[in-house]
Each structure stands twice: as C-alpha cells, then as structure tokens.
Length: 511
Image (tube, rainbow, N blue to C red; front, top):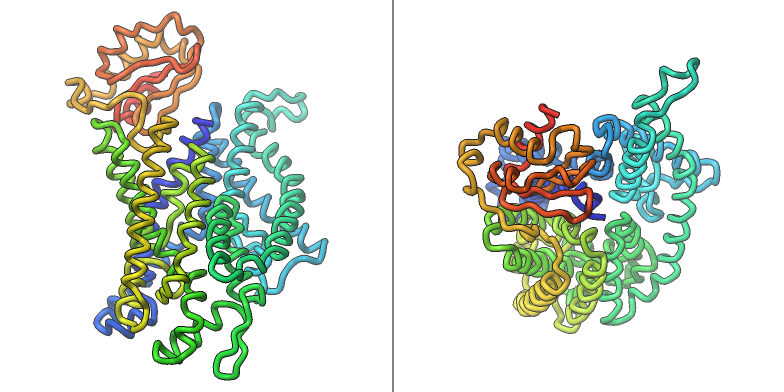
C-alpha cells in the first residue's frame, strides 16, 4: 500500500503547479471577469492567457494517463520503463474496449447527453469517463505484469515476443476483459445515483448529502455524473421564473444571475438553494477547508522536514484557492488513509448544511477566490459575510480534525517521514558528491549483488535486499544519510532528504 501511495506522488507533483496556472488563466478569461475588469480584455493579454490555458488544460484533460504512467513507474519493480509504456497501451485498449461495449449494448450516448451518463471523449474515443481510476487500474495491471513476466520464456517460434516484450502484449490482453466489466459496474453505479437523486433536493440537508457524495465519488470520476444529473435534469428541480420553466440547476441560475439580477424576487427565492450545489458551496472547500487541511499537515510535519513539506502543501493549497482544483491535496491523504478521506467526505457534507439556512447567494460554477470577488463582493444581496463566518467555522473544524487524525494514527502526510531530514548532515551532501555517496551506500548495503530493487520516495531510498545481514549500518552513515531502519526483514530505508533522487540515480549508474 505504501508503494502504491508513493507512486501517486509524481502525477500529483505535476498536477499541482499546472492546475494553479490553468485555474488563474481560466478565471482571467471568463466573460463575467472581462465585463467587470475591461483592462484584462486586452487582445494580446487574452491571447497569452488563452494559450497558457490551452497548454495546461491538455495536461488536466489527460489526468488518467498521468496516473497510469505514474503508478506503473512507482509500483513496478522490474522493467519500469516498459511498464510505463505498457500502461499507456493498456489505457488506450481500455477506452476502446469500453467504447465497443457501449456500442454493442446500444448505450453509446448522443454528444449532447454524454455527460449525464458519465461518457465523454478520451483521446478521440467516446467512452466512459472513469477519470483517475481508469489510469490507476491500467498502471497497476502494467506494473504487476512487468513484475511477473519480465523474464518470460516462450517456445523458439515465439521467442522474439518473450521477456520484456511480453509486458505490453499481456497488459493489452488483460485490459480487454477489464474493459467489458467496468461498464457494467459503472452502469449500476450511475443508475443508483439517478435513483437516489431525489434525496439531493431535500430542503436544506439535501445539499449536504449531495456534497458529501460528490467528494466521495472523486476517486472514481463519478462526481461529474452526479453534478450533471442535478445541473441538467429534473433531478435538480423544476424552477418557474417569470412564467418560464427551467429544468435543472444550471439553466435556472443562468437566468437569475446573468439576466434578472439581485433585485428580482427570484434571487432571494432560489439563489441560496441553487448556489449550494455550485460554486458557493465549493468555496467552503477551496477557500477554507483545503487551507485548513494544508495548515494541519504543515503543523504536524516534523520540524526539520517543514521546509520540504511547505512547498508541496502550499502549491496544493494555491491550486485549489486560485484554480478550483482540489484533487492534488485530496490525493495526498486519500490513499494514505482511506478512513480519513471518508471522514473528510462526511464532515464536508455536514458543514455544508448551514449554507442555505444562512441565505448565502454567492457564486456560479467555480469556487475560486476570483469568483468570490466577482459573485460575492461585486453583486448585491449575496450575504458574503455569512460565507466567511461559515467558512471560518469550517476552517477550525477541519484543522483540528485533520491534526488529531494525523497525529493519532501517525499518518505519513507530507513532511512526516519517519526520520527527520537534515540537509546539512554531511559534507558530501553539501558538496553534492553523488558518486561518492553512491559508492559508500552501495558498499554499506553489502555490495551491488545484495541489492534486489532500488526505489525512492520524497526523502528516502527504499531497497529490497538479498541478505540484510550484510548491511554495515556504521558504513552507511558515512554517506551522510540522516537515518537507517528496517521496516521489513529484507527491506531497508535510508533517509537522505530532498536530494534522495540524485543519490538513487548515481547508484543506478553503478549497479
């Protein structure tokens, strides 16, 4: 489980800064932003902003692919490069097989209704939008195949396809039955969501139930289905505004927000309810809960690791605060502690319930600080002060719940590696003499013949050994490492701090 959790660090590290840039560019190119601040409508400036948005969005539009490659690279112990290649081939296969299944069963949706049934375009293929979960499945399959079949021997006639060449072939074959099973499971889940959608419209508490389930479905990509159901179908309610019927939340809020305005009676009648399913409630997470969780992680980080943890945590928080993207932070604890993620979903729902009671009428689709400024401060009758008060309560609750949970169960959130990291623990490390450090480390581990596998996480080497009795701990400390311990009999951790990757690369060149 720890290996799997570490494998998610690479895609998360990419998503956080890219998501922050994408969010800012998206906010600065919104029509309502241009209307309120004409200066940013400069043609050249908008060209730059939209170009950056297009560049960064291609990364976010392919999040599953990033997770497929990251998980394959992190979990595979043998032939990591081939495993990454196989994960991409497997992901393409998975999407095409799901397309075939949907076509055969007559469930391939029309373009205008794709989102409502959880379908969309992925790499040019109309398929199920299972988001990061699809990539994770492919990455795990490719890694397991690589570990099991990297040295596969075949009869002479097929010998060319043996060994590492067999890894992508077997991965593709394995994804075919998986591609037929996943749509069946997803269809059952989608039908279940539709069948219980009436609960989401229950006065006051409905939005809390909706938001708790929305958070819980993020790992599976089904939160898009849930959102589409309430936004565009009768499950989101029927609204009679000036004699015209609007189906779903989004058409109704479009009419009130952009055509009628705060002075119309429909504003006070519908906006507290409508915004509790959209950007207003999302602001509680992006502007208050995520910063609170980030602060809890920073405060619980070990003292000498805080410098390392601060950069990771701050980037994730700003990605949500400025860009409306919460996944990078959520993924930092989702797989480390599923129980904490469940608690997070539940209290997110509970703490959303007071939103309608306070008559808050802020927001549109997004929940960034920019949206708070536009739809909260520049519009009248939004009761934005109530959002801040409710957000402050959320901040306190989430901070103390996460702080207690992290400390109580000793979770390895960013900065809580088992050994404190001292960057200046060795002259060799200060001089960045990676080759010398690698020589000392290999010798201390009993020689390169004693090393079965070599990996690293944020601050430590993780090494499988043939014979742990050959390890010379005193010799290892001469490398400048900050700590050594054996979590398992044949597995050793050697802590080097943020420079650990350079040590691993130097060691790999010598092994």
